Image (cartoon, rainbow, N blue to C red):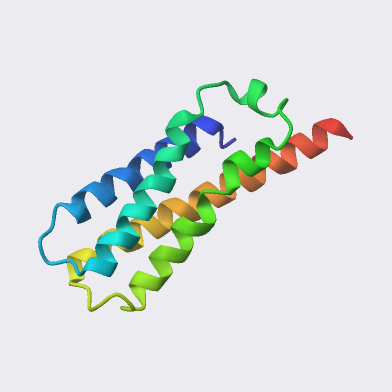
Length: 121
């Protein structure tokens, strides 16, 4: 079963891809701003310093897991539409990797929410 640890691992991979992208010199200002925002939202997961069992006991724990994912996914989709300027093949590949990690995180958080709901019943 997917766990909080898996989510944190995906968030680390997203932050890493953002660091790689931000190290490039061929980004437009808008692309740089969006990638920075993606990285900041991925970094929010680093502040989750608790076990999965402790996390699900907190009110609003699902919000803690899900809220950074919407802007990550949104900014990636905007960038992939070339809204901030054209992307190189490598930039596009890195952003697709970020999107894939985000999709995995959404699936993991959904599974955790479903499992917690089942335990309550």
